[in-house]
Length: 237
Ligand SMILES: [Mg+2]
Image 1 (tube, rainbow, N blue to C red):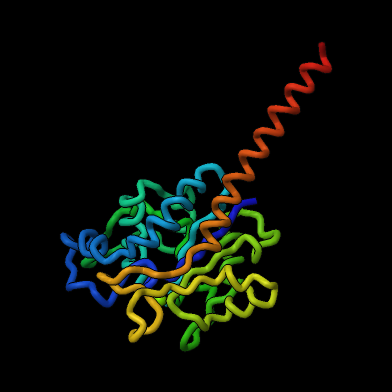
Image 2: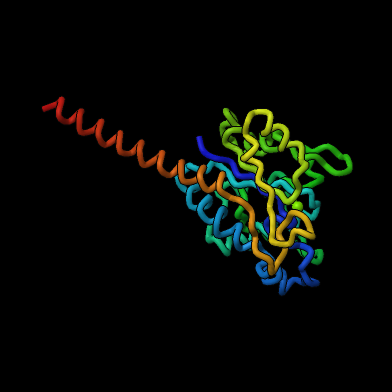
């Protein structure tokens, strides 16, 4: 079973506050300029690489932004930047979004980097102010993707600029506090969160280690298999 990476959107993946007015023509370019490049290079790129061989089961977005179109565009731009797209796209696009509309013109489904996008007013989330983010949300997405949910907390890494989501306590309780990664930039006066033009100084060690363990693990398994094949061959002789 592979890892599950869960990302907040605003001030984690993208500095939404720095975006200029956008129109149909410059949408993708404006998003690209405000992305958290450190997060992309240190986490998203290696995770996308390992999604191909199932060391990473899913990369999903859990956002309290309710702008579905914007979230889908961020996902589309990341698919372009990372040259990696979800193979589950039709499932959540068809069920949850159907067709995107921009300037009231129907737009075809966009390619998506994320395997699932859960926005604030998603049908599975409670309709209350300051919508909580919980392991239940992660479980919902993983089940919709028809992936295994065994040991889900152990496999989950969560990234957000907020330190107080319920999921933190849920992971803490199981001794998995380091699976909750708070995005920090070198702007202490502003508090946590990614800000365009300022280095992301988040300690990504836990996820970097988890991704490299997975890589090592699969190499080891392949070696054992080779040995077993050799032994079988010898026994046959
Ligand atoms: Mg945020």
